[in-house]
Length: 282
Image 1: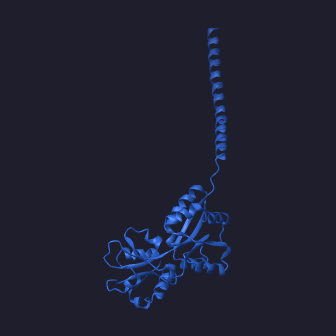
Image 2 (image 1 turned 90 degrees about the vertical axis):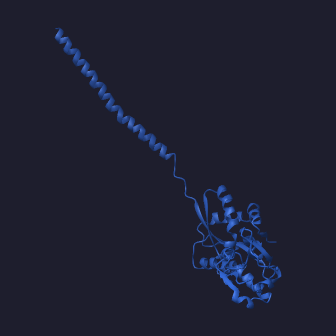
Image 3 (image 1 turned 60 degrees about the vertical axis):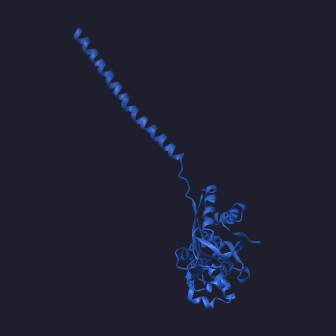
């Protein structure tokens, strides 16, 4: 009898163990299922953020510093937009747009380049505006010994090279040629002329001693501690420097382009331009 009871107890104990193991095995898939459901729910509540719209802005090289400052302010308020600048000579940028290069906005250092794109129906006349103006100056090395204070001094023997932007594509070079022609010295200075692809290269030529004098905008002269203004070119001797801005018709981001176009005309943006030496066009 004792043996019979003992066997029953052992069998009962084994049955309990099997029951507990069975419960454990059925609960695990349920727990896993809940975990998957929770994971799926978490994923659904965290959608991927949309990529920022990339705006390509083709702009005159002389606007580099001001626009980079404006970029910080604009992108901080508009995180869904990323500004990509294509800096260069206005004439070269005009040709790029004419040849189909991607661009959403164009900022030129000369009205003629903007007019050419309007005439070719690549920019709408109603979506372009003259924004700023600038001055033409002659710069020399800050520690240079050459005595230069007026156009006539460029003929001195101590002045070996005079740097200007390529007149056909660089507005500052075109203005310089116009001024020197009206001052009756253009032809006599031909042997001294060194032409550059844009105003920033003119600065480099003078900074490195490859030219004693360079013609740039006042805004460019302010960017280099290695240079100083030798003289301001008489504004009566060249066409008024105008900086227009326009929206390229082929833009694929019209709303964002229009928003940035409007921002460039705001007081916040104008204040930045003025800080870097530009003047508001009356």
